[in-house]
Length: 263
Image 1 (cartoon, helix red, strand yellow):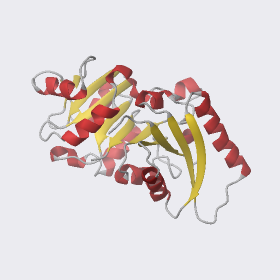
Image 2: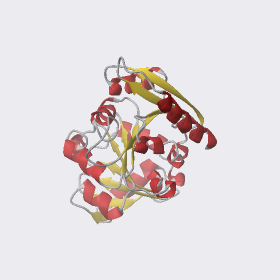
Image 3: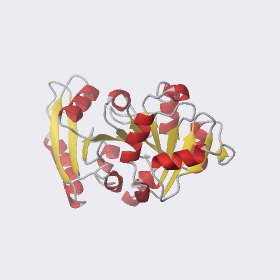
């Protein structure tokens, strides 16, 4: 699996999803060079001139940040299926979706569409967390990968997940990264200069070291993480991570964004 170069960015034209086009440092850290902004319409709905202008503004913002960017408008009965099909058919490397992290939401913002994409996409999905109260671009564009928690399971190491995560995550581009072992609730730092596999194995060799937490969310909050990296499905005690709505809800209600890596 190559590093992420080509990103699909679905938008419902809401304020939070428009911010994705301004907060581009996350995309650069992932290695992206090309971005397609996709607006999915229900059958029979016609796009308005003002909506086309918004899409154009998003593309312009991405282009000014150095990305090869354009937009498309599609139509389908279910936006999530339309997004996933578009991403897989056109050889995208990942999907990036905005999230308000709050209750009331439009179709993409922590709603049924974003959950369906997370649970069914064969590609990595980054759910970028935005709050509703940011007063400036600087406040809104907190770098997702400035403080990361990578979830692993010492009871049953998922080698496919580790390999994919190692390809996607560039430790040198990320300020602070911790592992969280869901088997025993322990966290330890991924030191610079080590690959992901080595960084994980060094922590697993000594189970007495590191801080212990009662849950993933306690670790995320204690470490003040800006992002959580986890598998969509795993083995052993990983199974519950995205199979239960409470896990998704708790991550969304925290300050952390979420990068979901499929099997």
